Image 1 (tube, rainbow, N blue to C red):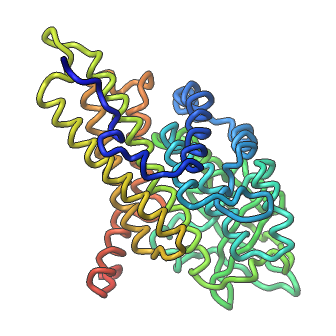
Image 2 (tube, one colour):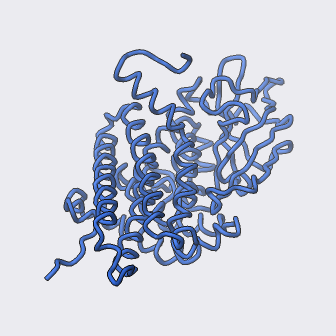
Image 3 (cartoon, helix red, strand yellow):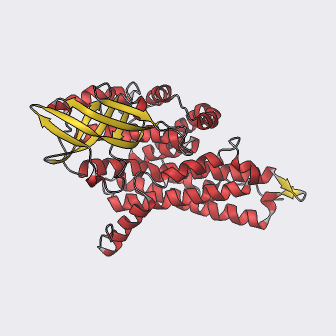
Length: 392
């Protein structure tokens, strides 16, 4: 008699590597995703719309927004627990994890780490509750991998600052109440806390996307946006500020991509057991089993890598190149798993009745954002050789 099918994570008993509190947080998020996200997200993806404000309030009520930050209404969980939440959110959809990631690891983290007490008390409790949504303005139309070349500029005018420029591919842009915007100044790159109601601030949603359709993506236009001196993030200058925020988000991606890959593999295994060709389940064919075995190995290795990074982060010893290893490997392998799972479903793999094509399209973006595959490759290469190859 054949043994019962095992879940891919059961192959290595991976649940034994997380504690009871982490499991409890994971299970709450998984249940929310199963009940709220998965039944709706195919329609959101198809229509290119999402109830972002409503979802932010729901996830704020669950304590997911800025959950790894301390104080100001934030839950103060471990980094590993935050990573596991990202995994479950992205098992629903990359766009849902992006909403939480941009809110907590970019906008809220920037204010929490570098903001004044006034900025923290004004924004963080409302953002943690989902009553205010944030976005993060770094990337520009001509400057993604090279943010030091940004053209957005902030000039002093008396005690005020005046901002002009354009930011591109900004998650949450058109639904945000506050934007953390990075700009060139005479004293180097500085961050600004910009209420989106400020005159001269405009956000335009980007349409015709074939990826991350269940996510708000926008262009930010700043035309003579006048801000008081108190809008500057006081505790950071230069690229250290935005890059440290990006490392927070990349850490979540190392976990999140494993969630998308897991959902694809679970779907493919279930489908292959039920789907019959030549009078037998396709799961019984050697080629299908090879695909499933290879994908399970990469999924489990990616999960182990993410957990290791979580433990390093909880000990406050994680290094940027280690986060690059996680983002590089897990985004790459998750995309490969999604593509292979799509092949197992054949023609059914391209419909939104199954999640795989949606995950596959989303992962094409995740493969690129928060540092492209190429840039993280060069970060790892520099760590191994001591030689920077970014310009060569």
